[in-house]
Length: 158
Ligand code: FES
Ligand code: FES
Image (cartoon, rainbow, N blue to C red; front, side, top):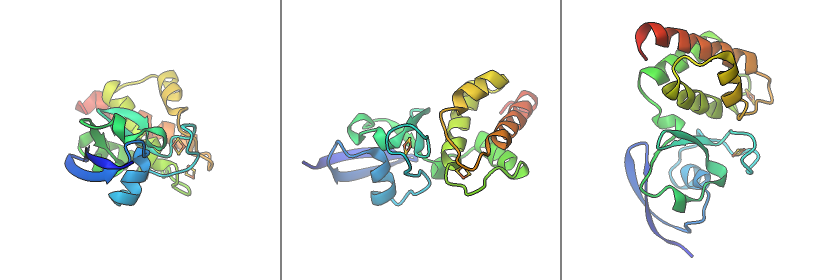
């Protein structure tokens, strides 16, 4: 049964008449037209649908909208600021994407990691990024890009 709920997405409040059990990914893509987060496995295994909820990476395919009311939801479309710019630059320099399908999840996960831990070790990067699968095998380029941003963070205070 649907009801009126308010979701804050990319700093904008949206009033939605929707079943509270609806997965967040469906609302983002179908209702709000934010198609950066992708549907792939649908069972929290691949990370293609990753968004931030109160700064933490969350798999939106298995997150009911009822659990994110009164929280700050940020999608790849709303990921802005010096860290986002540094990630975009490093992704371009390393020519990371192949098909691109997983890359939203990769960047959102990397951003959450680097915000909390600006200079992660290789092991910490591997641990966090193992949450997001890439069928094209861009893992090495992703890790190079993250370490590039981490190195610039120690020099520029990102
Ligand atoms: S589509 Fe959400 S984790 Fe795979
Ligand atoms: S770039 Fe194709 S799935 Fe990752």
